[in-house]
Length: 225
Ligand code: IMP
Ligand code: MG
Image (cartoon, rainbow, N blue to C red; front, side, top):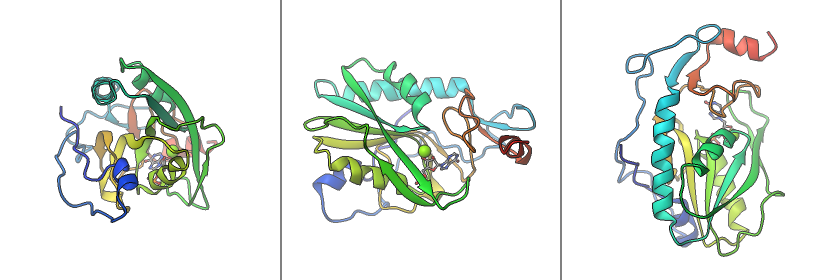
């Protein structure tokens, strides 16, 4: 399975002042465009549908680890996990790499939105260590509209790293509304609200080993039943 070639990378934002567009060099891969036909649907407590299985995630994380190891060989790498959604991916991904690296954390949350649609972004970089001279990969669970990643890139740039790239497990391509795409991603998914493998609804479901689409009963349960 090939990785998507970056259309516009986070590092481009640092090097260039002129905006690129999203059109261009997209290579299709890992695209989950039909979540009811191509994938077997398993049952959760109610009828949570499994979009991406545990095994599919495992395989893909191994590929991502190999890709990062190749790309950052001989360069000081810091993987900057975005709290809280990236923690499961972060733990698996760093063990799928074989180059020296440091791990750091940053927090991003949005206010004023609903549980399934984000509001205004707030970035807390108080946990971020010195990044000067280091190559940083910002690691988040999902690239939805892309506004969070844009905000994170701007925040991390203040720390003077040698380069910044972005990596996410999931990319909701139809929803992207910024002039940026992730440098590395695991799976392109359709415009569905998903949970599991770090992704939450109301802070629930992060522990699920797969990525699933909750149904109204699941959401009701996560709201306290
Ligand atoms: P963006 O700023 O629209 O890209 O949204 C990014 C953030 O929204 C992610 O870091 C998630 O916390 C959250 N988010 C977006 N889509 C989903 C989803 O389908 N399930 C759970 N969280 C999501
Ligand atoms: Mg998040």
